[in-house]
Image (tube, rainbow, N blue to C red):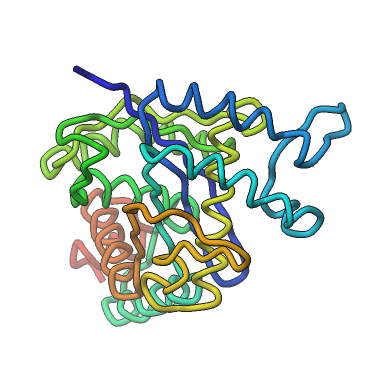
Length: 272
Protein backbone atom coordinates (compact mmCIF):
# COMPACT_ATOMS: atom_id res chain seq x y z
CA UNK A 1 0.00 0.00 0.00
CA UNK A 2 1.41 3.38 -1.05
CA UNK A 3 2.00 5.66 1.92
CA UNK A 4 2.46 8.91 0.00
CA UNK A 5 5.84 9.88 1.42
CA UNK A 6 6.68 13.57 1.49
CA UNK A 7 10.06 15.17 2.05
CA UNK A 8 10.07 18.76 3.30
CA UNK A 9 13.38 20.51 2.65
CA UNK A 10 14.72 23.96 3.60
CA UNK A 11 18.14 25.54 3.23
CA UNK A 12 20.58 27.12 5.66
CA UNK A 13 23.54 29.05 4.30
CA UNK A 14 26.45 31.04 5.72
CA UNK A 15 29.76 32.25 4.37
CA UNK A 16 31.14 28.75 5.05
CA UNK A 17 28.44 26.16 4.51
CA UNK A 18 25.30 25.46 2.48
CA UNK A 19 22.93 22.81 3.79
CA UNK A 20 19.69 21.48 2.39
CA UNK A 21 17.93 19.64 5.18
CA UNK A 22 14.60 18.42 6.42
CA UNK A 23 12.52 15.33 7.09
CA UNK A 24 10.76 12.58 5.15
CA UNK A 25 7.57 10.94 6.41
CA UNK A 26 4.17 9.70 5.20
CA UNK A 27 1.59 12.42 4.55
CA UNK A 28 -0.59 11.04 7.36
CA UNK A 29 2.25 11.57 9.85
CA UNK A 30 2.81 15.11 8.60
CA UNK A 31 -0.86 15.93 9.14
CA UNK A 32 -0.68 14.94 12.82
CA UNK A 33 2.71 16.55 13.29
CA UNK A 34 1.51 19.87 11.89
CA UNK A 35 -1.28 20.10 14.47
CA UNK A 36 1.15 19.55 17.35
CA UNK A 37 3.66 22.03 15.90
CA UNK A 38 0.97 24.67 15.39
CA UNK A 39 -0.03 24.49 19.05
CA UNK A 40 3.49 25.61 20.00
CA UNK A 41 3.78 28.52 17.59
CA UNK A 42 2.82 31.18 20.19
CA UNK A 43 6.23 30.35 21.74
CA UNK A 44 7.97 31.33 18.50
CA UNK A 45 8.20 34.55 16.47
CA UNK A 46 5.31 36.93 15.84
CA UNK A 47 4.92 38.50 12.43
CA UNK A 48 3.72 42.00 11.64
CA UNK A 49 0.32 40.56 10.75
CA UNK A 50 0.02 39.03 14.23
CA UNK A 51 0.58 35.45 13.09
CA UNK A 52 3.19 33.20 14.71
CA UNK A 53 5.93 31.34 12.88
CA UNK A 54 9.14 29.41 13.58
CA UNK A 55 12.37 30.57 11.93
CA UNK A 56 15.47 28.99 13.43
CA UNK A 57 17.83 31.86 12.61
CA UNK A 58 15.52 34.28 14.44
CA UNK A 59 14.89 31.88 17.30
CA UNK A 60 18.66 31.52 17.79
CA UNK A 61 18.91 35.26 18.42
CA UNK A 62 15.73 35.95 20.37
CA UNK A 63 14.24 32.71 21.74
CA UNK A 64 16.81 29.93 21.74
CA UNK A 65 15.44 28.70 25.07
CA UNK A 66 12.15 27.82 23.32
CA UNK A 67 13.70 25.74 20.55
CA UNK A 68 13.82 22.58 22.63
CA UNK A 69 10.02 22.55 22.94
CA UNK A 70 9.73 22.47 19.15
CA UNK A 71 12.34 19.76 18.80
CA UNK A 72 10.45 17.73 21.41
CA UNK A 73 7.57 17.60 18.92
CA UNK A 74 9.94 16.15 16.33
CA UNK A 75 11.15 13.63 18.92
CA UNK A 76 7.55 12.46 19.38
CA UNK A 77 7.45 11.30 15.75
CA UNK A 78 10.01 8.52 15.15
CA UNK A 79 8.69 8.11 11.59
CA UNK A 80 10.29 11.44 10.62
CA UNK A 81 13.55 10.58 8.82
CA UNK A 82 16.13 13.41 8.86
CA UNK A 83 17.82 14.12 5.53
CA UNK A 84 20.60 16.57 4.71
CA UNK A 85 23.07 17.45 2.00
CA UNK A 86 25.98 19.74 2.79
CA UNK A 87 28.37 21.66 0.55
CA UNK A 88 31.35 23.46 2.03
CA UNK A 89 31.49 26.67 0.02
CA UNK A 90 35.30 26.86 0.06
CA UNK A 91 35.39 23.33 -1.36
CA UNK A 92 33.04 24.51 -4.09
CA UNK A 93 35.23 27.50 -4.92
CA UNK A 94 38.31 25.25 -5.00
CA UNK A 95 36.48 22.87 -7.36
CA UNK A 96 35.59 25.79 -9.62
CA UNK A 97 39.22 26.96 -9.68
CA UNK A 98 40.39 23.46 -10.57
CA UNK A 99 37.85 23.34 -13.37
CA UNK A 100 38.95 26.75 -14.67
CA UNK A 101 42.60 25.63 -14.64
CA UNK A 102 41.75 22.40 -16.45
CA UNK A 103 39.61 24.21 -19.02
CA UNK A 104 42.42 26.68 -19.59
CA UNK A 105 44.89 23.91 -20.41
CA UNK A 106 42.35 22.49 -22.89
CA UNK A 107 41.58 25.86 -24.41
CA UNK A 108 37.95 25.58 -23.38
CA UNK A 109 35.56 28.27 -22.21
CA UNK A 110 33.60 26.93 -19.24
CA UNK A 111 29.83 27.24 -19.29
CA UNK A 112 28.20 25.97 -16.09
CA UNK A 113 24.95 27.93 -16.48
CA UNK A 114 22.57 27.14 -13.58
CA UNK A 115 25.13 24.78 -12.07
CA UNK A 116 27.18 27.80 -10.99
CA UNK A 117 24.39 28.58 -8.50
CA UNK A 118 25.26 26.81 -5.19
CA UNK A 119 21.60 26.22 -4.28
CA UNK A 120 20.83 24.68 -7.68
CA UNK A 121 23.93 22.51 -7.43
CA UNK A 122 22.93 21.33 -3.94
CA UNK A 123 19.37 20.65 -5.15
CA UNK A 124 20.63 18.49 -8.01
CA UNK A 125 23.12 16.65 -5.82
CA UNK A 126 20.46 15.90 -3.22
CA UNK A 127 18.17 14.39 -5.87
CA UNK A 128 21.01 12.46 -7.51
CA UNK A 129 22.35 11.09 -4.23
CA UNK A 130 18.91 10.20 -2.93
CA UNK A 131 17.58 8.53 -6.06
CA UNK A 132 20.73 6.96 -7.52
CA UNK A 133 22.58 6.00 -4.34
CA UNK A 134 19.82 5.52 -1.77
CA UNK A 135 20.70 4.63 1.78
CA UNK A 136 18.55 1.71 2.96
CA UNK A 137 16.07 2.98 5.54
CA UNK A 138 13.57 0.80 7.36
CA UNK A 139 11.24 3.80 7.72
CA UNK A 140 11.15 4.28 3.92
CA UNK A 141 10.24 1.01 2.17
CA UNK A 142 12.10 0.18 -1.02
CA UNK A 143 10.25 1.33 -4.11
CA UNK A 144 8.36 4.14 -2.37
CA UNK A 145 8.52 7.41 -4.35
CA UNK A 146 9.13 10.58 -2.36
CA UNK A 147 7.36 13.83 -3.24
CA UNK A 148 9.66 16.67 -2.24
CA UNK A 149 8.47 20.08 -1.05
CA UNK A 150 11.00 22.92 -0.83
CA UNK A 151 10.84 26.37 0.68
CA UNK A 152 10.06 29.16 -1.78
CA UNK A 153 13.15 30.43 -3.59
CA UNK A 154 13.88 32.44 -6.72
CA UNK A 155 15.66 29.40 -8.18
CA UNK A 156 12.40 27.48 -8.43
CA UNK A 157 11.76 28.90 -11.91
CA UNK A 158 14.76 27.33 -13.55
CA UNK A 159 14.57 24.21 -11.37
CA UNK A 160 11.03 23.50 -12.51
CA UNK A 161 11.95 24.41 -16.09
CA UNK A 162 14.75 21.84 -15.94
CA UNK A 163 12.70 19.11 -14.22
CA UNK A 164 12.09 17.01 -17.35
CA UNK A 165 15.81 17.14 -18.15
CA UNK A 166 16.60 16.14 -14.57
CA UNK A 167 14.28 13.14 -14.80
CA UNK A 168 15.68 12.11 -18.18
CA UNK A 169 19.29 12.46 -17.05
CA UNK A 170 19.00 10.19 -14.02
CA UNK A 171 16.36 7.80 -15.41
CA UNK A 172 18.84 5.11 -16.48
CA UNK A 173 20.63 5.00 -13.13
CA UNK A 174 17.72 5.48 -10.77
CA UNK A 175 17.40 3.13 -7.80
CA UNK A 176 14.66 4.95 -5.87
CA UNK A 177 11.47 5.95 -7.78
CA UNK A 178 11.06 9.62 -8.54
CA UNK A 179 8.02 11.33 -7.15
CA UNK A 180 6.12 14.12 -8.81
CA UNK A 181 7.67 17.43 -9.82
CA UNK A 182 8.97 19.22 -6.68
CA UNK A 183 6.80 21.86 -5.08
CA UNK A 184 7.96 25.16 -3.65
CA UNK A 185 5.77 26.47 -0.83
CA UNK A 186 5.61 29.23 1.78
CA UNK A 187 7.06 28.03 5.09
CA UNK A 188 4.56 30.09 7.08
CA UNK A 189 1.70 28.06 5.59
CA UNK A 190 3.39 24.66 5.35
CA UNK A 191 4.52 23.92 8.89
CA UNK A 192 6.71 20.89 8.07
CA UNK A 193 8.99 23.35 6.28
CA UNK A 194 9.57 25.05 9.63
CA UNK A 195 10.76 21.74 11.07
CA UNK A 196 13.01 21.38 8.01
CA UNK A 197 14.38 24.86 8.73
CA UNK A 198 15.24 23.79 12.29
CA UNK A 199 17.12 20.71 11.08
CA UNK A 200 18.99 22.47 8.25
CA UNK A 201 20.15 25.25 10.60
CA UNK A 202 21.52 22.82 13.18
CA UNK A 203 23.24 20.67 10.56
CA UNK A 204 25.01 23.77 9.23
CA UNK A 205 26.01 24.81 12.76
CA UNK A 206 27.42 21.36 13.49
CA UNK A 207 29.52 21.33 10.31
CA UNK A 208 30.85 24.83 11.01
CA UNK A 209 31.96 23.69 14.44
CA UNK A 210 33.29 20.29 13.33
CA UNK A 211 34.34 19.81 9.71
CA UNK A 212 34.40 16.03 10.01
CA UNK A 213 31.72 14.05 8.18
CA UNK A 214 29.42 13.62 9.90
CA UNK A 215 30.10 15.92 12.85
CA UNK A 216 30.16 14.20 16.24
CA UNK A 217 27.35 16.37 17.61
CA UNK A 218 25.19 15.50 14.62
CA UNK A 219 25.66 11.80 15.30
CA UNK A 220 24.75 12.37 18.93
CA UNK A 221 21.92 14.83 18.18
CA UNK A 222 23.65 17.16 20.61
CA UNK A 223 21.89 20.53 20.62
CA UNK A 224 24.04 21.99 23.38
CA UNK A 225 21.63 22.12 26.30
CA UNK A 226 19.77 18.94 25.34
CA UNK A 227 20.03 15.85 23.17
CA UNK A 228 17.47 14.36 20.83
CA UNK A 229 16.40 10.76 20.74
CA UNK A 230 18.60 8.53 18.61
CA UNK A 231 17.30 8.00 15.09
CA UNK A 232 18.75 6.97 11.74
CA UNK A 233 19.50 9.77 9.32
CA UNK A 234 20.16 10.30 5.62
CA UNK A 235 23.41 12.29 5.76
CA UNK A 236 25.15 13.40 2.56
CA UNK A 237 28.04 15.72 1.81
CA UNK A 238 29.82 16.69 -1.41
CA UNK A 239 33.58 17.02 -1.00
CA UNK A 240 35.84 19.01 -3.31
CA UNK A 241 36.77 16.05 -5.53
CA UNK A 242 33.13 15.10 -6.07
CA UNK A 243 32.20 18.72 -6.78
CA UNK A 244 35.04 18.98 -9.32
CA UNK A 245 33.94 15.77 -11.06
CA UNK A 246 30.31 16.94 -11.21
CA UNK A 247 31.24 20.36 -12.59
CA UNK A 248 33.67 18.83 -15.09
CA UNK A 249 30.97 16.44 -16.30
CA UNK A 250 28.58 19.37 -16.78
CA UNK A 251 31.26 21.30 -18.66
CA UNK A 252 31.96 18.33 -20.96
CA UNK A 253 28.24 17.78 -21.49
CA UNK A 254 27.79 21.41 -22.49
CA UNK A 255 30.71 21.10 -24.89
CA UNK A 256 29.17 17.99 -26.43
CA UNK A 257 25.88 19.81 -26.89
CA UNK A 258 27.58 22.79 -28.52
CA UNK A 259 26.83 25.10 -25.61
CA UNK A 260 30.15 26.94 -26.00
CA UNK A 261 31.46 30.28 -27.19
CA UNK A 262 32.45 30.68 -30.89
CA UNK A 263 36.21 30.49 -30.23
CA UNK A 264 35.91 27.22 -28.25
CA UNK A 265 33.60 25.83 -30.94
CA UNK A 266 36.19 26.66 -33.60
CA UNK A 267 38.94 24.94 -31.59
CA UNK A 268 36.80 21.83 -31.19
CA UNK A 269 36.21 21.74 -34.96
CA UNK A 270 39.93 22.14 -35.56
CA UNK A 271 39.53 25.49 -37.29
CA UNK A 272 41.97 27.18 -34.88
